[in-house]
Image 1 (cartoon, rainbow, N blue to C red):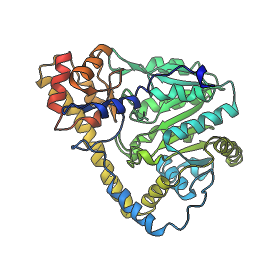
Image 2 (tube, rainbow, N blue to C red):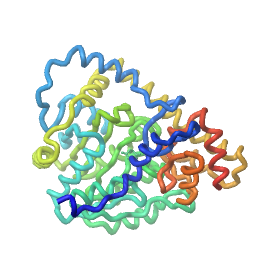
Image 3 (tube, protein in one colour):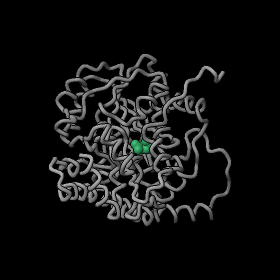
Length: 396
Ligand code: LMR
């Protein structure tokens, strides 16, 4: 059986982790995988998570199966966090949420549900998008096509072209949007642009699938969910995939959520029943630990406040790193304008250098980034910024 297989290359993002860990250089810089790092280059367990974990150890009574929907309390709290507590779709009982193994698990559940709803659906993703989107949707049997998004020359959005393309997409298809902190470009839609996108979605009648992997990393919890909330208030059908990997720092616990927004409660229940079927056929039920931590935090006003403070520290550090990199590149004599990095949002930006320059940075200077020149801004620290800016200046 396995003799028929040909080896595949390592994942373009996760493969970097192994290479970086094996590199003996004492100067090495990791701008690869999108994980938050503090100034010491460490990915900490948040203090609110530690406290929630302690409570859980004391209170947990059983490890019995949790069921395909996951924890009802987590599902309620994460839904309120995403949509806002008094969102019209929640008040109208149009939303159903399940816990999933991370944001990737949420995307796969959404993809399987789409396949059940319309086996011929095409899913449209931004050009560019997260490297795993295409493989994930194709693995679920969907056709993947792209709409224009990022202009590599001007480092801005191709907004008019994007809207023109959306206005050609039929009601039977699905369009994936990034809620905030666009991965990989860091170019987000403004509120005004979201309003135009929502109007185009209403006009065309396609189903929006919003991927919200970085809520709170852009401008704030509510600001980052503007598009999600506006869309859910104005369309009959929508899917939302949320992740707690970044904003709760729960990467390896694998906790996310997939929400269905339907026209009414009856339709939402039917869609949920199909979603539970695809979950059962896939991984049966989600892991419970991460969900228990998130629900403990969101159910306690004290822990929630602490989480907001810790989230702000992470957000401010990333934004500070953006300005720092732009300034240090200038100070190292780089004439090319990298000012766009300071204007973008979230964990990532494209440096905009060639694949050869990316390879040279890795081979000669042990600076790791994705081939596309996507950098994870959180990997920048006071201890490596001089070396990093100097190495970039040299390959330029
Ligand atoms: C990334 O884009 O680096 C993160 O979302 C991690 C991953 O799974 O790719």
